[in-house]
Image 1 (cartoon, rainbow, N blue to C red):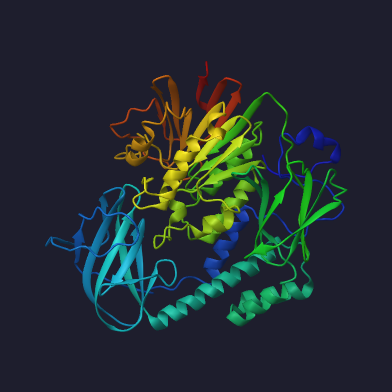
Image 2 (image 1 turned 135 degrees about the vertical axis):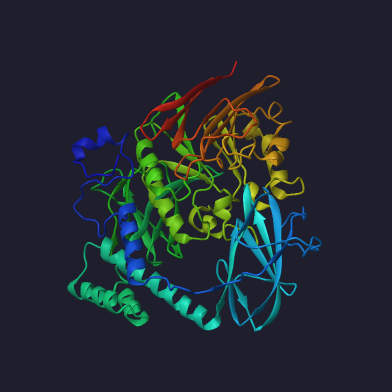
Length: 577
């Protein structure tokens, strides 16, 4: 269900169904919505006008020594001994989940960079010295010489390994960086051309000139000309965190001070708050009594948005999803579909994007989340850490979804529902070692008054303790071992997870405690094959895109899994005596 314009007489009837939608108002918006179709059109134009160069790097096709016997965890380790005589060529992949895979070879290099393509992440040593990346997967080679290359691949999923290693000489690297800069500026120019509704004749002429010449100077000149006319790269979403505070977040093409103006009627937005941005990302604490609002910034005037009123009912309803993971057409559809249900918030259980160090991915995610006008509780997954295997800090997740004074793991309450969200990706291999701050925090949470006083208790983790739908994968053993003695003691009613791209459900009984395990990994990423692992035996395994709906009424919980055609593909109840 898309966002449309309606007369005010229909607003009261439609507000329960349409969220974050425009309403008619005298002061018109200065830009068009940034849709997925528009994004694809702009990306295609950038590729056509400034294509990537062919033959940028030279593949290193040497024989590589292999070490599969390193069981050490963490990101700061020394190079192990390579004792086996067996050698391999790349690309090389092996089924070795949650494990380090080491490669070593000798090669002569000039001055330039190495581009390393590894699954999931890589670390590099040159002649025994650790080298940090200059940019994403590009590692500098400071001077020409003979080198021993040692690469540690950190495999956080099932099969992993080293796909390719290429050397790019310094001149080509400098040229490539300039090309990337021009592509970034061109994307900004094309974005403003596509979104702005109030371009002057001279501004339009400057854009035409920049698109024709495509030089750095012309592109920068066009950007400067359009500087006072920002656009929203991602319209507002709502988030809640551990304190229960509601936040509005949006992303602008400008970092200048913005205003959020709001009121009880769309034509009487009489209240305002000034908001400081950080790298174009704006975050402001708001009241959940906010009804109509818009963003003003320099020449930017957003549409008037509606924040959905939370209905007073005897039930609490929320949506659960995971692994949107670059499947934006599917995820857009899921967000739009969810608006027809009386949901109060959503929980996103990780792998929110397909490549964590790609900022465009997070902008696409936020645009999709905007289509669901309720508050979101996002949790990172392993792909949100992609590109951050030097320190295991998901910078883009923190930039675009982080909240003040809150870790990537956190706990919260909604009424008499208690939630604990874990982030197993803070360590390698994934897990929750009992020496970690997160482990100690988790143990405190399950013994807290907030947890004990709740009527229903939910644990959220991107990685599931049990899974059957991914051949060769059986769930995260470290999490399974951690939770096994806690289900009855901590009275955990449900574990919500993703990671496996399907829908799975299993209900188990631990003494007097019944616990449901649901995997809702079908929010957009490519689906798992039809064949399943031999164990554990889940009650239901369906390889289909979907989302979950949970409705809690007093002592009864109802879970429904809904596919893209609005069919209920699974339905079960839990009850408390």
